[in-house]
Amino acid sequence: MTALLLENVNKSFGEVHVLKDINLEVADREFIVFVGPSGCGKSTLLRVIAGLEDATSGRVTINGRDVTRTPPAKRGISMVFQSYALYPHLDVEGNMALGLRQAGEDRGVIAERIAAAAKMLSLEPYLKRRPAELSGGQRQRVAIGRAIVRKPDLFLFDEPLSNLDAALRMATRVEIAQLHRNLGASMIYVTHDQTEAMTLADRIVVLRDGRIEQVGSPMALYNDPANQFVAGFLGAPSMNFLAAGPLGAPGAVLGVRPEYLSVSATGAIQGRVAHVERLGGDTNLLVTTRAEETVTVRLFGQHDHRVGEEIGLDFDRARTLSFDAEGKRLRA
Amino acid sequence: MHKARHNPLNSLAAHAALLTWTAVALFPVVVILVNSFKTRKAIFREPLALPDADSFSLVGYQTVLKQGDFFLYFQNSMIVTVVSLFFVLLFGAMAAFALSEYRFRGNTLMGLYLALGIMIPIRIGTVAILDLMVQTGLVNTLWALILVYTAQGLPLAVFILSEFMRQVSDDLKNAGRIDGLSEYTIFFRLVLPLVRPAMATVAVFNMIPIWNDLWFPLILAPGEATKTLTLGSQVFIGQFVTDWNAVLSALSLAILPVLILYVVFSRQLIRGITSGAVK
Image 1 (cartoon, rainbow over the protein chains, first blue to last red):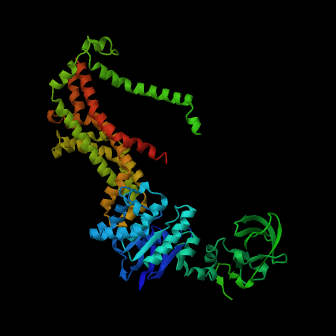
Image 2: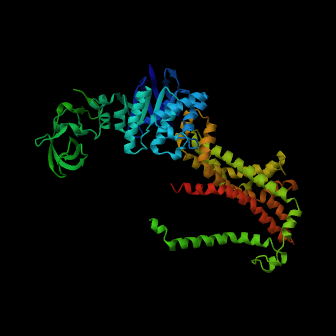
């Protein structure tokens, strides 16, 4: 069963063509993450799925039902917004109940679902509070609760963690992953944060300039990217791209992930340490090579390198990727 | 930085400036109030003196309450002001919502057209308006005034409110749409409460010119039954003899209702003016 099917979806705002021929199939219970730089159209695509924007052309099918012309409330979706978007005049309970009341749901059913959601999200002590009296993390949980009580066919998340601080973001990320396991629902999650994408997704959809660049599981995209853009977007610190010619590699650009570089006095790349980041568990070196390229090296554990030190780097040729001048992947 | 703000000298200077301004602004009002309680002779002998046992007199108020139908004038002014404000706020907010929320052809042009009304005084069209009112038989009705004041207030209302409505979070409106709220519910329940300070600002800006207006009541509704307070007070101002006691008393009474309305709006107003600056 497919939870969502997008067929040749296009969206233009006047002259600006924002989404170009989007085709995607999302399986039931799948967690899909849309990722891409800002302005790539990922939020617009989510809005088209939600029905907040009409597709200029193409077809949107949710749970086997063509909803291209259906208003948002009748699409069987719920959405969690970046700014929480709680109703300021209603308390937590009222916020969660509003959608169900509008749909004419039975009082008992509403109370039951709110109680279940509040329990799942530990919101029980706050049910009578207004959004203004809650912390950021609690507000986000209310927003998630409001989505849960509707029992939608499809959950949509629009950058839900970007307003939270780092510690809370990590905790909420884990909660969303657990929520997905507990509910067994299909979810689409938009983010520009590749860590969220890697950790949450069953499959990642990488978008650029309104086009899907590649779709696949996080590890598939990480290990086997289709092009230089995907290779550079996933992974932190991001992949190093070096001129292939001087290193005797095929193609125009050679891609090496920072963790596959190692320090070796006789290495193929010679340079000088420009900056050292000590993270405790890892040490990142920024090295300026003789060819004036900057290379990031990720060393595990703590290392005693200094800024200005001459250094040689070697890499595992089996784990490098080659790209042509347009950034397309060259496969051996 | 916090200390600098509490420097006693700075604070003294600020308060001195504010108090001076308050005194200047209140002076004419106080003169009117004080003199409205004095005899005619005392008004002219010592205009700035407070009423004492000798000069105290309520004759002005007695004249006002006896002559003409002052309660009716009050009522007319109140009806015209409140109903006009209601329509200005309702239609202004609705137009502003449409302009700020929906993408449609000619949106910007429509906004400019509506804003044009701020620059062109409505009195230029007086002859045409009078003609229109005569033909529709609305002369000497309160509706004539209400319609004109509503038209007069709309441009500024649309202009200010659409600016504020653009600041209301899109996510909130979209959350409402996903929860199945109608556009009207989104407008009345979600958006309007959030732009309440702006509504109060618009209300105050419009209220005072409507209440004080003499022009349109004189032209469109001069009949006894539809006289407003400002127009009604004119009976005491003659070409040769002016009953100053009565004029001052009428003016003092006219301040009251507008003062009450102002107090109602002002708590919202202060938030409205500062909300853009301090955040």
